[in-house]
Length: 213
Image 1: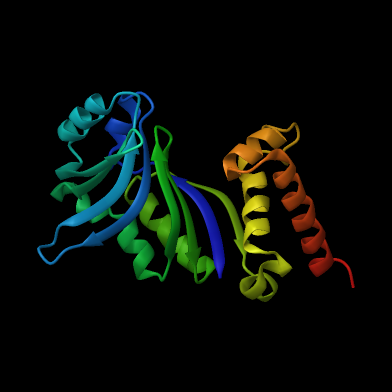
Image 2: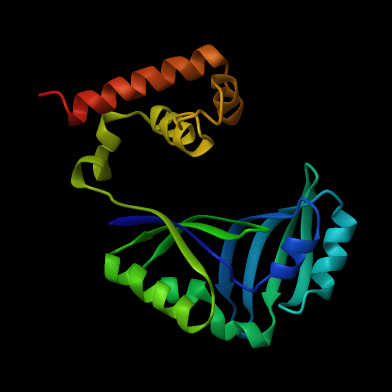
């Protein structure tokens, strides 16, 4: 299994995400219904939700829109692709090659995806589709999920795995460091001491499973 982190500058919602201050989307689901409507369900938030809704209504890439619920200053929308943009659905191509999306978010910089692919050729197929349709594609990280980590995460518990991934993604392990231990703890919703303990125990287990005989 190949895990890829990448960003695509897809036209869907591009104008809304670039013009509304603080606009951000967290994907929940995508599907095509029996009537052929290509739909996306996701949480959207922005500095001004009324401005956000007006921008979505005027966005040429969006067909019908429906606000399903509102919670914690964000709105769960069901959005239909406008007919002219159905042919450039990257989700459909990912599905065709056997890819499974894990996380999708979107902001002014584009759509950020984490996808599990069956092979490198599958990633190349998606990349080729984007190139042919003038959709900028930036591959940020790619790695193979080996047998060692595929079944047991290198001996890590779920919480340790979550902590180590958060440490990488937050910038806690960068040089220079972009996030403090307090930032990491806030991301995980735990105390600094708990975050430190999880991190150190996770690193010890990972090193023991992969480097120590």
